[in-house]
Structures are given as C-alpha cells and as structure tokens.
Image (cartoon, rainbow, N blue to C red; front, side, top):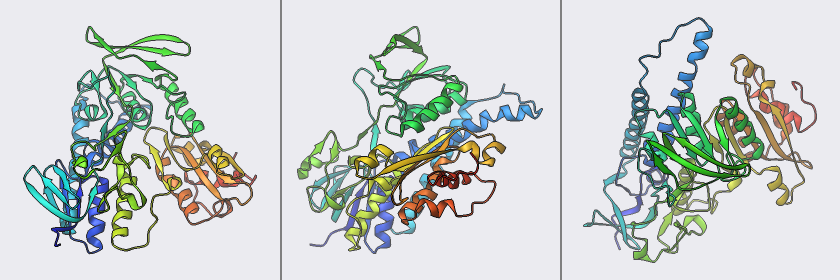
Amino acid sequence: MAFDYDLLIIGAGPGGYVGAIRAAQLGMKVGIIEKDKAGGVCLNIGCIPSKSLVHQAEDFHSIGNLERMGVKVDLAGFDYGNVHAESRKAADQLSKGVGFLLKKNKVEYIQGTGIITGEHEVTVDGDKKISANNILIATGSRPRELKGFEFDGTTIMSSDDILMRTDLPKSMLVLGAGAIGCEFTHIMNRFGVEVTLVEMLDHILPTEDEESAKVLARSFKKRKITMYTSAKASPPRKENGKVILDVETKKGNKTLEAETLLVTVGRAANTEHIGLENVSISTENGFIQIGDYYQTSVDSIYAVGDVVSVTPQLAHVASKEAELVVEHLAGEKVEPRLDPTTIPTGVYTEPEVAGFGYTEEQAREQGYEAASNSFPIRGAGKSVAIEKTEGMVKIIYSTKTQEILGARIVGTQATDLIHELMLARSSELITTDISKMIHAHPTLSEALMEAARATEGWVIHA
C-alpha cells in the first residue's frame, strides 16, 4: 500500500518538530499536524516566555546594584505590560524559527486538528484523511486542574494564565512548589509581588535532591518569601476581591489571602480527543503506555514526551525521545529507551538548581558503595566577584572506583554548568579526570573541579 507519508506526526512541540526534522534528515517523507503555533507549549506558553520573564526579573532586581553605584533610577514609568510584550516577542521569534526549519527540511506543515482514525490514518479537521506508514503522537500536556481549584484565568490561575497576564498582582499565593511554582515565585518576588508558597510535601522542589531544595528555600526565606510545606490546602473561596485559602500544617491551621492564586500541581497529558479509542490504545492516568522504542500497543503508532509516563515531562526529553523513535524507524541502532540517570533537570530560579543521575540514597539502593561530597559556590572566586555566592556543587560517586553516579548544582548558571559533569559521566571519566584538569580562573566551573577534589580529600579553596 502506498502511503501519503513515511511518518506523520501529531503535535509540533519539542518532540514533534525535532522528530520531524530528524526524520527528514534520514530520508523520510514527513508531515506534521499542529492546531496552534509551531513550537508547542515550550516555545509559546512555557519554557521560552517564562525564561524571558526570569531574565527581565533579574534585570529589574539589578536596579539596586545601579543605585549602589550612585545611579538614580525612576521607576514611575514601569509597566509590566512591556515585560509581557518582550516575553511574547521571544516566543513568536522562536516559533517562526521552527516553522522556517520545518520548511527548510521539506517537512509538510499541516495546520489543523488531527484525530487518529486508523492504524495508518489521521483525519484532519474532520474531513481530510491522511495516511502514513507510521504515526508519532507528540501532543504534549497542559496545566493540571484540581477539583475545587478550577482555573478562572484571573483570580485562580494556571501557569498559562500567568504567562499571558499583562499586569502584576500586589500579592499571590502559589499552590505547588515544584519547578514551575518555584520559578514563578522567583519571578513575581523579583518584581515586588508579595508571594506565599504552599507545598503539600515536606520540602519545596519535592522531586529534587533535598539538600539542593534547602539551599533554594534559604534563599527564598532571605527574600521574605513565606513558605508552608507539609501543608494541605482546602478549595479556595473568594471574598472582597481576595482569594482565601485555608491551609492545614503541622504547626496548626492557617488562613491565607492574596489578590490571586497560582495553581502549579503538575501537568495533564493531552491524550483525550486524539482518536486513541479508534485504534484501541489505552491510557493509564491519562498517559499512553509504551514498550521499547516508544511503540504503543499498535505497531505503527508511537508516542513521546509528556504523553508517556516513563520519563519526566521536559522539553529536552521529548526531543530526544522523538530522535530515538525516528532513528529506530530508519534502521539505526539506538537504545530502546532513555536512561533516566542521563536526563538533566533544571529549575530557573536564582540561585538555579540543576542535577542528573542518582542521589546518594538511590545509588545505594542500586547496589553501589556510594558517597557524596559538596563544595560551596562561594569558594570559587568569581562568585564573590559577581556577588552570586549562594549554592553548592555536589558529586555522588562510587567509593570503590570514583565513578560519577550523579551530581547536583545550586547556584547562578547551574543549568549550564551541570553539563561538564554529565559529559564526564557519559564519557566514563572519573572524579580524578575533573579534579586534575585545569579550569580557567576566575570561573564558576572551578567549583566543579573543587567538588571533584572533595571526593578525593584534597580541596584547596574550602
């Protein structure tokens, strides 16, 4: 049977568009279906605009440094609407860039809503039937909505809502202290919003290393951000233009109020209304179940990114998974799934939080004789020079072989610095290879060198 495409992809986010381009590079005829803008959530209402806000929040905060130099700054004309406009400009620029890349690689962009109507067929907007040898689902996710905490877009907001907001509230409650909650807490606090952070589990960033989370918590506390952990919130009520939140904590009940409530309690997979029932593909808690090479229960249909549960809901994970799928389809030898210990994580607060691999406890559970050593960022001279001394570098390693099993970095530029340690691990280097390698002075990367030396007992600058 002749198909319209070798590969048809539903969704043009980081999984879809990267998979499309890679498939085209490997000689496939590729079509990609997208109902909105190219780039998906990440480029349009996620990673990119939020990082633009982080950048501008730091610029705004740096006004204090200018004033120490004697510069007088008049904030009377400050308009958060301009901040929002800059974040949209960044998103639009990159979305157009993705469209250009798809066109450059001869990927056919199909605007519309795609529904799977057969093992080799997708119907677009109810009438246009398209066939393909293989189909890749990359439909991403959306903010998870809790019963009793339904979004109204203004007083009870999702992360999408706050990204599109053109003014600043005077006060905000944030429910959920994962990466998204902490990032928006950081942004709003930098712009002068009074922020209270509420987390059900026992520390902020509950999926991150606890020591790393404590460093960020101390920083937030210095910035007068109120935090409640091990806290259970009841559905909010609205009174006199305020959102009222009753919270049960270990230290007693609290009644919190603010102008608005941001709910960041995870993301729900976009697996409804895409035709899974037409081909008998089942889901579990909304996620598509996959086997090796991200294949669903239908041999011709694959799924990657936020719609599967085996890996974190991260843009770079979706991209890599899509690459693995299309390389497998092209007959290349690839691993059947991503190794979770090779996935970097990043939280774009100040200080940033980044990591990969095992924690010390996890490494021991895997049978390693493991230990960890930390080095304070302030021990790197550059951190003092640029006044960014909060944080640490921690390496988890085998006490037998000095093999690197994982790492955590908290500090400015942590999300960039983590990749030196990741590259060392993937290249099967040991801590000695880093501890004895010359690092330029002054750089923040010297802290990585010293952390490696800490595992061997010969730190110089601490």
